[in-house]
Length: 206
Length: 249
Image (tube, rainbow over all chains, first blue to last red; front, top):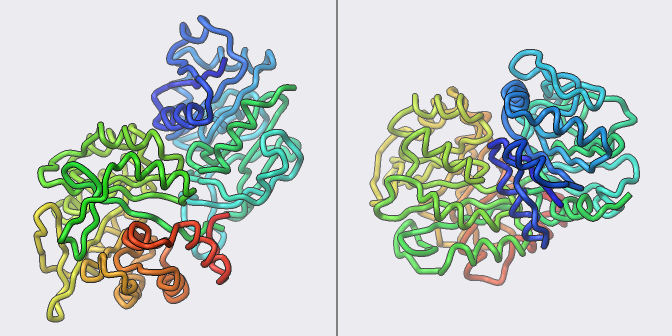
């Protein structure tokens, strides 16, 4: 069963509609009860907004421990935008705030490098995939995806799946650790490339 | 690097999509949901959807929710935005940005609050203008209300309070398909760092190329050329790419 964690973030519906368009029947997980009532093989966590606020929502809703358990037990997980950032040790948006600590690294502000680079990093930008992975299956190299964020992930090279040229040090645009994937960009808003990526995530069997 | 954007624009009036010339002479185009589905299949970069219905005092949230089901690309929604709650409703329904016209002219403080609450990336200001005998006017729909004003000062004020994107529509050229008003954009570029999207007048791919070669616009809007000719957003993308403009791939 495919679940989409729904903590009230605005991109939940878009992700849901994208999966329906692809022919799947995802279920929204709105509460820990919803989660415990079903067995999920694939979970997508779309998030937008501030790291600090979102992390507290995770704790207060009871979802943090469920996500950690699910991931530690090998379930396939895809975090989108803030949903990816929350996997890390801590974030600096709105003051230093702890994250779920499932992947080593942190989340910090993007520093513009060139004159015309603005913050937030908003628009279509290319993803350079640095290692083979079922998430992009060899067909999405150099494709543009839709980004909209002011903070980005800083992590060990071993977890980096994709990079995007922007800011002083480039942006980590996709990560993977074992059964957990994350994209900084919004596949649900990235047209054919985004839909292909979502399909790859759902179809992958290890 | 961030790519230049080709943005089909859709105007909704009362019961269906319309296309106007110079913000008048509306022609019915049909069902908005159908149009979104087609643009989705056409793999567009982005869409701007504006509700210019005659009695629109608030956004038509149900309509927006209906069309957003098929929008797998970023979409800017405008029309009838009067409160922070209106903006909240639209963003929660799945819109990526909201487009505000009259309220930005009437109340700068409102825009400042909107930018602060929702983030710069969520707020776009619409500048719909025409020029008559050396004076520039802002035009507000519904009702085609003219307001003589210093448009450069208006854009400057909004830029200072955090607006990071403007859609600039030439009403004189709208629907005419004779090319964009590049002179006007050049004037605006001198007084703001915000991203500008040029709109009104696109008739062919060459007009779009000229806009990207002769100005620093971040995107171009177009409607008539996609509705009434065989040209397509994909065709525009290919043409621009062949001419070395960095567009989406």
